[in-house]
Length: 552
Image 1 (cartoon, one colour):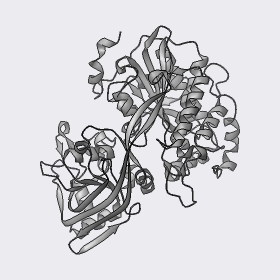
Image 2 (cartoon, helix red, strand yellow):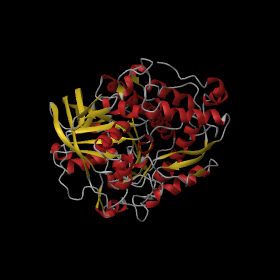
Image 3 (spheres, rainbow, N blue to C red):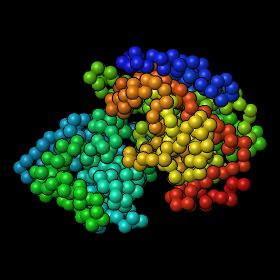
Image 4 (cartoon, helix red, strand yellow):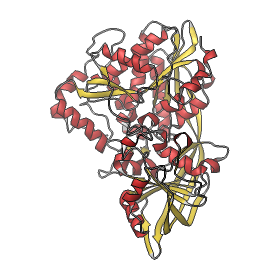
């Protein structure tokens, strides 16, 4: 494994501090062992773990390592049948021999898999064959009656391939405030686009990739969707999945629209209005054929539990996904292993360290459960499965804290709460951060839809108050510019790339502060009779209210 060391000279002083045994808060029950955390990240993102692909031999290594560490921290097996795991049965789909083309009259363009387009499926079968399907531009592909919005206008989409924009209508013009301004709603997520197209009976969907509204580059699309895709086992998959799920590069879409006599940018502007009408790309057709290797696989959530002393039936969750992309196509350096050090070996290491903090602390009144989810990278499938099949009742789950891609570049001024304004956990985050001289981030919109992109979401939509914290603001320690550059470079060049690798140069003190905050809030809740709730207006509040009688 290559060690990231390009910033070693400028970060040497910070790295020395990072290697210290504890956080700057000193000794005590809430002191985070930074060297131990770094070692956990290093191990989990080592090449020998092969990118932590699910349902691969690497999964056995992950499960073994996590269960050993949780046990050493003093936790008990919290999974099924007295074990450390919960089985999650999925369908696995691998597309191959992809042949795709678009045409308008006599004009034709072949589309290269991975270069021009990425084609996949999550519908069981041996092959997909779409021949000369008509193409229809449906704007953002949204049907939201509560917002008086319908991009389909009752038109028949059966058998057609829908071309849709990523994000939702307010992204380009936040002042419209039809979909919460610049903060993405669930309607902006790629998962929603595919789900709605299935409800419309479409043969396929092509999402036009644009970096700003997607919040990631084409290489991320290429790496995430070229490999195996997974889905939960569905009783009626054909009603919930389209045969072809695809992304196309923006330039290819612009050319297609031009050949059909249409102006892509003009139609984008029209798509921001409730009056938008679906637009058939006249004489345009798509053909796509590819083989599909479909098999049923079992992957595992890892579950560890510290039973409460007086109220063991009441649960506080700490969650984070252990999986990553696995092994894929080689990058420019020939590296095929997507190590996933930051995403999400860092969060997984954070869960292990939190378990150690709890193991050293007095026994809590309420139970503490660590949930290391599988299949987050495949669409939050491990957390979706647990939320639908909870081992510990959701009605008596007090709250939860999700950890995904932690800050490895140093201490920052503020703590952030993705989805801020949803639950009463915001005030608890703010109060805990204040003990460290930090404040809660109050500005900025969730334009990338982060609230819908991590494992807290399946639990939140079923009513469990979930916090998804991070860091914000300026770095607090020198060399500040070098830290900013390193963080920016990760987002630009390492996220979902083979270069997301462990570095000895990281400054983990900011990560340690965040872990302390989560421990403090959990400790306060575990020793109380408090039940944090959803704030007025939250779409998740009514779900929680239905089970009020279960909490006392």
